[in-house]
Image (cartoon, rainbow, N blue to C red; front, side, top):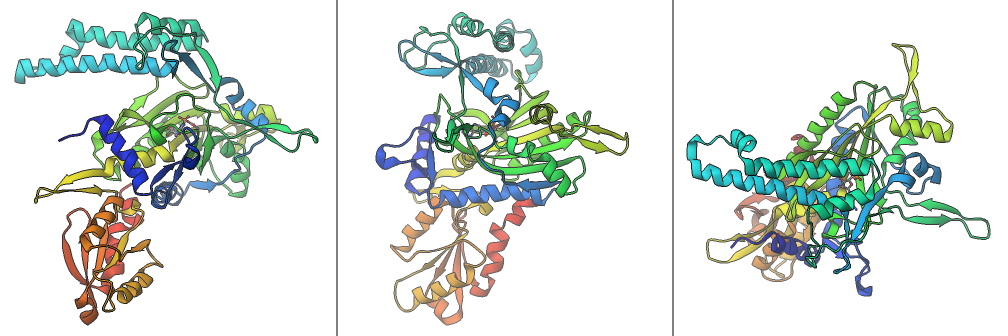
Length: 514
Ligand code: GAP
């Protein structure tokens, strides 16, 4: 029986804990909200995702280089970037449930519900009218469908106008006019809307010496901007070129829900691509396509991805789109592609007094490059991979097995070495095969429990291959190799193992699909 979205999400969360992928932070002290630790399998999967991104960016593009900047930055960076003044979420509380929400999220979800109602009407009409049905015509002429779609657009247009006018009362009024209720209490007793800054503040130095206020960085991007000229000069770079970075970011998220989807400490994989002014839209389209290709290379169903072009642009952008992924709780942003203009470099020029410009030999003039950014949350990517891969498979004999169909190159362990029995020299031979393979691959060794149980354990953590050592192995050096997905087994010689594992689980084969 198919699980409801809530049930399947719960399964992902409990699987992540049970099999050592993700733990609640400081769990023995009852946890810390929206902060998580990655366990023995989680850290391997996470590192493989990082590696896939890093190599696709830095190794496959000869005009993209890497960087690892510090989390602490001069406090003026965040003044210049606009985060001190504008990195806010509009919040609203429900007086009955005492629950706090982001006003923009309430409105976006409401608009999405209206759009879904329109789609339902169209689906019903398609069944009623059969082959002669013209969905596009119906969408623009049926009064009920047109009504839903216009209402959805109007809600978002009013929201954009209210935020641009910095009129928080007007934002609240849309929530009241649309009769949006609290999902917990069902009431529409809302407080005022307030702005809340998401940066964590801390101090550097002792109080006696005069400590200075710092922020934990809310994005890795600024570390790239302030190093732009360092990399440009020392790397002898030419525009257009990009700088990529993976690192921690911190946000005091108000509505921290949905497991590792929205965390207070998380990791970003960001790339800032510096281009000539006027060419930014071309590069924006280029990176929009390139990033979707990277996601699709993993081989999950393409219908789980879609673009969402922004209605309301961030203070620094002249175009922006999200790549959304269909999580068990619906389509949500996994990655942003933003055309950030020269906003950041110009602001850093202004605030530091040091021009962030390059020389154009064609025009004999200095100019401030424009920037196209790609920014993906590593933890969200991890959640998308985990939730797509987890499956309860019904087997022919009426039983079922839990299998994590991870893309092979991302699996925490590429192969498990399993001696059939704990005697007759089988463990020793298995150890020697393990010793051979471990220099090239992440391989596990497991001799506990019956072989069937061990296969299931490896299926549940996504190991693509199980290599079993039996009595015949002692005689002729052959082993059986079992495929995670088909469960088929074949006999091969131990000397072939390197090649077989490389063919099935190497990062190279994944990168070639990007
Ligand atoms: N430098 C641009 C930037 O930071 P963003 O849309 O705020 O843009 C980029 O964040 C990505 O970072 C998002 O698409 C998401 O995947 C991830 N992200 C943002 N906030 C997050 C959070 N609280 N927890 C986990 N991931 C988050």
